[in-house]
Image 1: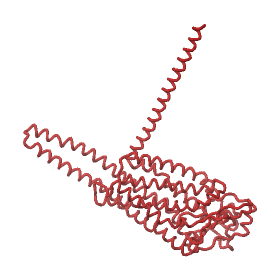
Image 2: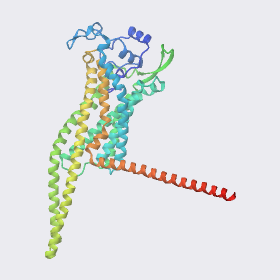
Image 3: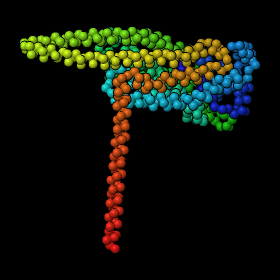
Image 4: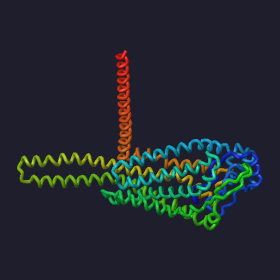
Length: 461
């Protein structure tokens, strides 16, 4: 992947002691930044494992020696310096699959709920965003399979395509979030009763975002190639995923590095910050604008009722005067419901944007820092690898909590989800009752048949 993933961040599988000694004697530390996004991207899975599990950098090898945070690093053992990383790897080894499974299940439930309710532009955007989030979690879990399964040649052949698809889905989810926040902000600014797009138009916009992001990630589909490599430990030929010579060139790395940062950081982050401020201000003005529109509507209804009952006498005037009162009560209830829906939906967008900025910024900052100044981000041995695993888990955590967010801030989604659950429960109960009736009829038929056979036998005797 050109921007987000780094091969060295993957938790390595245990090495054979003989192979580890060979790596320690022959592998050198990662070279300085050569124009790639992350200067320590491995060219193969073997190099990746060697950089994670191999020898640590010391002061004479280009690492950091001396005193760090008041502790003499040179007098610490390898286990002491990497204890925090081993602990985090052990926890994330079990937490990451749980996060992926829960996120996918929650996303599928969200899609089923959004598909049941009456469509609007907001629902179309949320469907597109949830689809991208579910597929992104699936790709992330696929990329982590190498930590839980033995080596597979088929997996190595598909590794580059899965990473490229992961980038494409990440770009798509990010820009769908930006587009739906922009539309919501413009709607609040202009005090419109309706959104700019209908449900169909929003679906077209979502499809266009997916298409443009696919074009943006298209070069990454040719970044990796599967090459056969002889493994001296197992004494057999294995297929390894290597970076292609074209993608390994400094010109390509520098160009695509800044391009990826532009479309994932420099453009969307300022837009989301500005639109968050706009949405926050729009929430305060939306209630007053809706009340003004209600007053105008009540005045028009009262004027229309007065004109309609103008020649009807006192009884007609009384009956005509009572109509606006009843309409006013209905309009007030409609107003309160509309205000609640508008405010909750706006609050949902604000929370989604703020959580994305909060949970994706650490990993983005870590990768950018390591790409521009790699040695500055390595003050302690293997610091980048340990932090990458933690920040990667936090990043995927954002896409796995969409169902709780929708249930908390989107009233129409919550009602549809409750109806879906009740429908499933009723269907289950109905099937259970029908099965019980069928079993009861079968038992009655069997007992009557046995009784008849017994009576015939006794009669013959």
